[in-house]
Image (spheres, protein in one colour):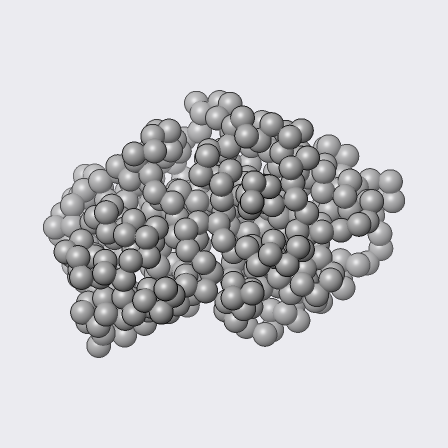
Length: 422
Ligand code: GAL
């Protein structure tokens, strides 16, 4: 129940109304009676996300279904609206969550359909990465359908801006990084394009932590060991993260992630730390890797934070909805859907049998790391409960936005949040 509370608390009340109104609007004239109608809730509203979502909708329609789109902007807001609809007894056919623990309480309250039949029919276990099988299953049963692998710790650089300041390639150590940021600042441009929301600031911190010390990253998020904050790796990461605060523009607070990506696309900013869904924005803007932008995994290109998106299928006894759920579950993981969707989304397919050569140079870098367990770690949401993630988001965003906060107070408060969750 803690996770549900955490999810509901983090979205403004107006969203609940929006969710309810959206549901009412959707209840308009029924679509063709004889086709399985799927109302799908998600938060893919940016240019790149919408282009990818359209692949799912088109493929479902081609398979004989009727897609009823229920998009709500913002992951936190959307998840709160989904939980409200499902707990409130008016569930959609399917709802998007992240790979990980966000839907634990819905499973615990027996509000989701187990997906073992679909997994059997689709032979999911023959191609899903083991970590994703585990993240989508509870007590040996599938309760979620993973649909992609998003690398979460990419550094995207504007080639135009780096060329302008004489930086020929993405930096691979922090000294080089800050030297490049100083050049961009001196040129009157925005060094770091940062979206000003807690989850985005936490992505930047997690990227810095992993780039500084994989051991500290795993001690923090996998072991959730409060003692990590006294280790040299965590402390150095806190110093680097604190130093970054003076390289963002005053417009950063409240900025959406895709608006930060737009600063790179329009040559106004140097770098954005973000998941590779940002690649979907470059693609939607007709930009190419290495021609218009650089994509670097973290700082040294050697450790990928993997996570992604899943769909859950709320419990229903309605025969029509069960049919729609079965058709949707088979459509989302079909090889052709996986190829088309992930190219648009900027993510990597969860199927190993999708032709990797069809993906761009950035995805190729990611897939190489994805193929080797020694070069990847789980995204924070996969390993910690939603309420602890929220508590850590709060500590990170407080440090990031309060210039009076020091790396020392940040590490102390981070350690306390980990301790409180024990
Ligand atoms: C992530 C999700 C991505 C993208 C991103 C920004 O949680 O996995 O697919 O939507 O949010 O909205």
